[in-house]
Length: 256
Image (cartoon, rainbow, N blue to C red; front, top):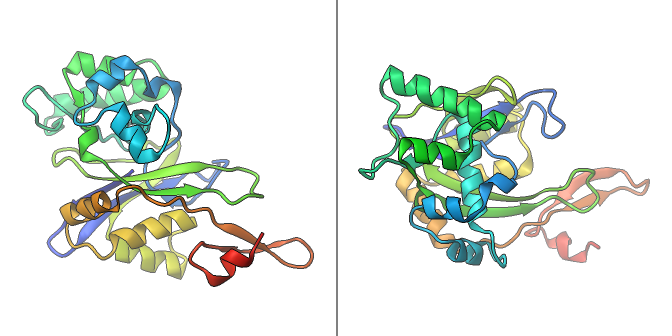
C-alpha cells in the first residue's frame, strides 16, 4: 500500500525499512503490505467494506471471486505495519487519532490485530467503523521471475493517508520509517542510500510525476486494470543470474 500525502512543494509517500533478519527483502525499503490471509475474506467483512463489492474487486483483479480480500488485506497490513487504519466512523469521517486516548486504544488494537487476538471485523464492530476500500486504487501487478527461490504474485495499491493519523514502523518486521518524496526516494535508491527491489522503484516512478496526492490516486483510477508485469532473469553462459529483463526491454520477447 502506497500511502501518500501532500506537502507545500511535492507529495510524499510513506516507506518502511524491513528488518535485516527478514527472509525476503531484508533491510530493504518497502511500502506497508503483506500476504492475503484467510481472515481477510468472508461475508461479514464484505458487509463492512464501503464503496466496493467483491464482484467489482474481483473484476478489477481479473480473478473469479475473492478480490475484495486484497483490499481488506491491504488495510489490515497497513494497520499492523504502519498503524494507519483506513476506516470511517458512523459520520463518514476517517478514524481520528488526534487525542491521546484514541492513540492508546488503537495502538493496543494494532498490536492485538497483528498478534491475531483481534480480527479486523471485531475491531470495526467495536469501534463502529467501516473499511474505506473505496479510497484505495489499484496501481500495478508484479509477479516474481521464474527461477527465483521465493516467488510472489503482488498487487500494489495507493491511498491518501488519513489526516489525523501518523504512521510509524512496528519495530518488529520493520525497523525504520520515513515520509519521502518519490523523486527523492528514487535519487537515494540510485545512490545506494536506500535499498529497494525493482517493483518498489517502478511504483515510485509511477508516483513521481504527480504533484498532489489526489492526482496520484486519480492517475491510478485511470489505469483501470493493470497489465501483469513478469520480469525474466538473465543468465550468463555458466547459468549465473546477471540481471533482470523487464517486458518493455526489446530483448524480453526473444528470451525463453
